[in-house]
Length: 131
Image (tube, rainbow, N blue to C red; front, side, top):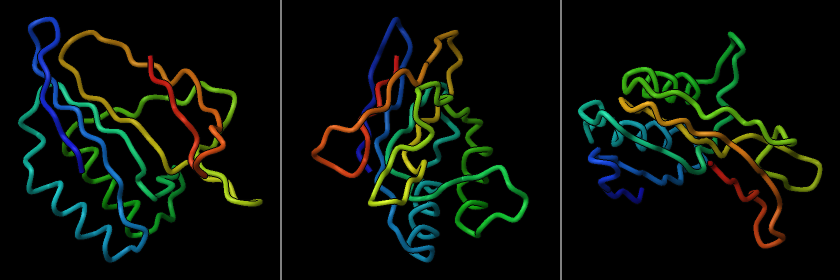
């Protein structure tokens, strides 16, 4: 987890970049640590990174999906919608997944758009540009 607070147009923002563990048990601990950070106190927050979790809309969710959903709801985050031409952010062989995400909570009327999503050739994760 890398965090910084910035002031932009007289508003304080917490910007957080995360890289969540792969295993379900380690993700549970990771999410518990995020809860301990009391992120609810921030009025403006941006969280982005590799969540290592699909976070699907299906009813039959995995344990880690439920834990991420609980955290997102408790902080009142909204996901930045992927409007790029790709519905995945990670690619390895024939496997594709949308595990890289951005969430925002803002008392300001700022809009955040997931503009582009493309391979750099350096990583199995795509570069994501938020506007």
